[in-house]
Length: 97
Image 1: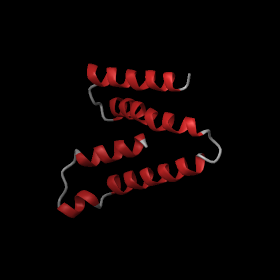
Image 2: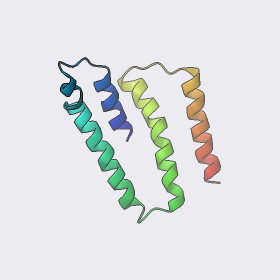
Image 3: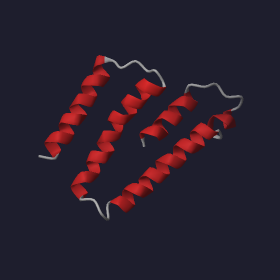
Image 4: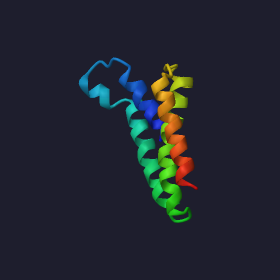
């Protein structure tokens, strides 16, 4: 899911020749394809994974998106983003106690 967010962000940062080109380019179509695939895989994974583990994967995608955004897109990691992700990680830890 984090990779799909990176693809969509990459497309949003570019200028496109037409309004239709904003939506019909490989970044957007690939991002939504990955998002849809991720959703399907999550549904299938719930057959074998405890229901309690599901929200952990969803929450962890925000942490992965921050890391990938910093590494691939060279986005600045602000203290607010860092603290937000620390809270997400603490929430995951508390949720699994």
